[in-house]
Amino acid sequence: MTRFAIIGGTGALGAALAGRLAARGHEIWIGSRDPAKARAAAAELAGHSDCVAHGAGVAEAAAQGEIVVLTVPYGAHPETLEQIRDAAQGKIVVDATVPLRPPKVGTVQLPAAGSAAVETQAALGEAVRVVSALQNIGAEKLATGGPIESEVLVAGDDAEAVEVVRGVLAELGLKSWHVGPLANSAAAEALTSILIQLNRRYKLVQSGLRITGRPKDAPERAAGIAITPLSGLPLFKAGDDLAGALIAALEPMGLQEGDVLVVAQKVVSKVEDRAVALASVDPSAGARELAAKADKDPAVIELIVAEAQELMRVVPGVIIARHRTGHVLANAGIDASNVPTDGGPVVLLWPQDPDASARALRVALEAHFGMRIAVIVSDSVGRAWRMGTTGHAIGVSGIKPLRDRRGETDLFGRELQATVIGVADELAAAASLSIGEAAEGTPAAIVRGASYDRDEADVGIGELLRPLEKDLFR
Image 1 (cartoon, rainbow, N blue to C red):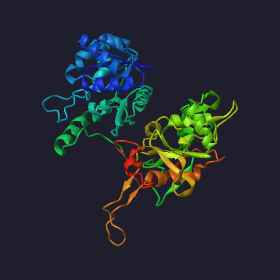
Image 2: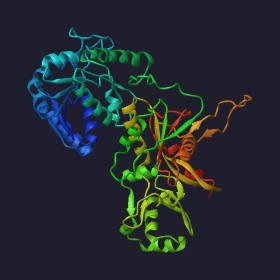
Image 3: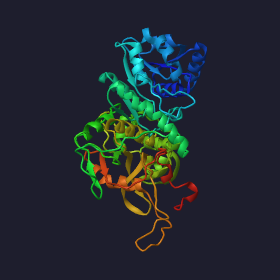
Image 4: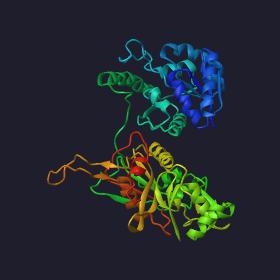
């Protein structure tokens, strides 16, 4: 946990940033020229996010923060710098100030020093490590708390301080680029006026910035699909850094824009501590009755019932359940394969929120590699009227699970009327051939070259699940 002082934290950008940081467990000091207003904002923040938040005057807040963030209007910039000068010594100061001069906010008007960030460095002195960032991310985007596709330009003369700030941005789900010395902040500050012009001229809502390209040594994307299993991954346990291990495994091959990472549900469940020792389960009378009918351990039945919205079929050897996430599958996804049993029988439950699990991995990998990708959490699931299991997507991020091709034409010019492809399931099934279900020990694979629609809103797996009113199998 880090203590952040958000100077100007009662404004739109400062409040949105404070909310994001608080949601990730950091302690927040909101600084304002009006301490009473700052205290009220802190109380509201703490009430919404159950975080530690304080309100104070500008100088006091800056003194309390380990990292100080300036989110004040340019008109208040000189006065604010004077107030925080003593408190900022030896600290990282992140300056998000944009030199906008109303009413001509759509016209670039950089100061004589070249940029607001350069003015900050001159005013605070060499003992302060000034880093420029966040000029091009709108407050409304930050305030949503959801994924942000816009990227952040970070400038600074102290490389270590720049990387600290980039680490914070990655934690907040923001992809960033180190664009060189602090003087280069002029480009990011000027871009804000350009984005304002784009919003006005083209009726956009909070337009943003994205850097395109691929690593110099990366080959051009080949035609067709390639599936590459990630080997050398460890045996995971609760609390392990799955994203970090995947990044290490991916470093030799790198990522390309549009790659899809498919990760087996079992490793996600393991690191998220979803293993349950059956000895710890106290089966109810109802579970014991169902166990006799299904010829299963009553403790397993108790867990199935807890994980299910509905038990759809109960026969000897198997229970078909509608999982609490909406998926229909055997035994509510509870499985004992590839789970250590040193202390007695242990089973593994699905992740609490598979979409959130996929999202966390995508954000971490995108921030590290600087590439937009998609992530699928997969499990092997049986299908109605067919024998055998295939890989199914149970959680997704960055990809629309369905690809609607209605309205397109076939080889003979006929318009497609009903072609909606379950692309997330197809990719999960393809990757499962490399991931394996037995002793392969390869819990993830990269699918390269796939065609899919990017999910900018990151809404997850929901549209792939057939609504109850359209259930054709009962």
